[in-house]
Length: 325
Image 1 (tube, one colour):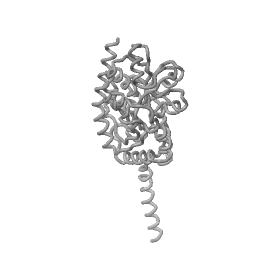
Image 2 (cartoon, one colour):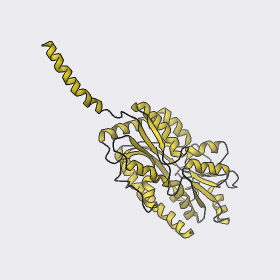
Image 3 (cartoon, rainbow, N blue to C red):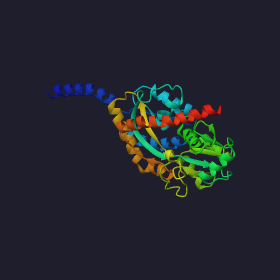
Image 4 (tube, rainbow, N blue to C red):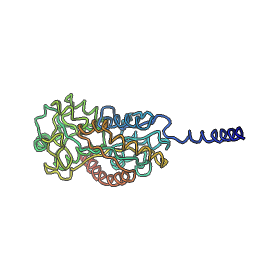
């Protein structure tokens, strides 16, 4: 009898094991797509987050840069990937909330083709200048731009990005004509600024801060409602009188549409734990980023509401471009 029960137990166990082995997620590396070139603001957030998620989930989270079209290329690749949890997208506001309004056509529908996982970071943008440019604040920049219309250039991470639209909104609000020079990411734009190829760049603090601290670039203004703690002497666009330019951009993690709920729960938990960790916060906070996570539902609501806000900004940018052709 003992032998029979042992045989039966072994048979039951052998049937159960394959089902259990197929259950756990993840069982192989996860690809994290980043929509801009290496060295840019989002890349510098994604890599420490991916490293910590690897530690938490027990599988490698491999960052893959897919720059181009203001982040739309990486967004489209994500939208067309299998909904198995092995492709996730460390997205910025640009491909999700701006590009659908700015470009005549993108290969995805933001609200239909992605599964929200979690918010990751918020941060203001910085307008920075090459040290040779004799301006130290927004008032001086606007005065110089009015004396030299179309002569000063600003770089961005690409057409349709938040950095591009912030520059165009400043042009519109101040009645000036800064020339937009798009790059395939904040890193290449920063290289151009450091070399003097462009006079100005609109970018995020985490790429700019090391160069501001060493006086290789000069911070002119930030875009949040209040001054950054890391740059207490740098005024905001709101302080300069441009109240509509209280703009803080966000970054989040999404996956393809219809990700199974258990996978979303595991990814959300891993992202929240990673972003809350000392290892990630010690990278983000000193560089001016504000770590902030969310539920999938909260992220969906944020994306939906900001699509309307940035659609108005995209309309301003496109109108200016049409008038300067």
